[in-house]
Image (cartoon, rainbow, N blue to C red):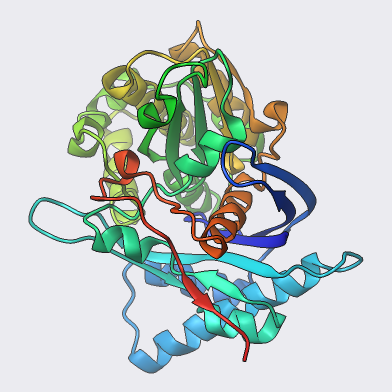
Length: 379
């Protein structure tokens, strides 16, 4: 089956579209990437999304118009990714997260992804599955992370202990024990590690007076010096000590958090490059610290994916914190790192079509395995 996966993460860089051919189910799952492309949002739409993520208020009419605007972009991406390809028969769309409230002992979680699937289906003329997080949340889960189960069947290894580390706006990890271990599937786990690129991107935009949106290859940060006392202070934040299952977003690691970091940096008289170096090390340190706190053992290999996997300075800092672990990208294991998340949602849609549960309760905290996603058929 040919399936399109659509994904836009918390960095709001644009819509990652992956056209894949999928066969098998779980242990015999095979996925071939036929085409992958990132379609940037129009500047005004991206600004609106970032504003809403930052807490700007909307009327219901404005919310509906934003929902439709995002869906139209997703629908166009689905159409364009099929250019010069035979058509797909299914779309799996994650949508654009604009709000995420983790589940706690007192409160059921709430996660809102805009870009409604019924409009995407209408534009692309393809059955579309979306709203993947709601079912898991209803079963007491976080609704995140949802990629650990696809990761397990796409990137596991017979003998290696692996971590698949996505570094988008927020970082998330999937731990994969060797497939040769008895009951290995029950030992797969995952969680949101904390900030990925979110604080870095916001800081670069502020420090460059809006001229830059990210630190390409980590080049600016690499000219600075890490302030370790500040990294240790920031790592004392409660989220990093919270045991999995857990999830987070820009609601925590966003503008207000960055301003507190900048205030700390000013006290230490850090240069802009020093601030970026220190924020980069926070991302790397929070990943390494969560591995040491919550994994049964450190991995033999880390497979990086997402935009942050192209940041050479993040790679360097992570290696310095985990010197005995081999660090590479998911590309080396046969899954394109730029589109790995979009591929995962194509797989989740494929599993939903064949009535195969898509969540991993040990990762999300849900009470049971569930079919994920709402199906929008064409009439």
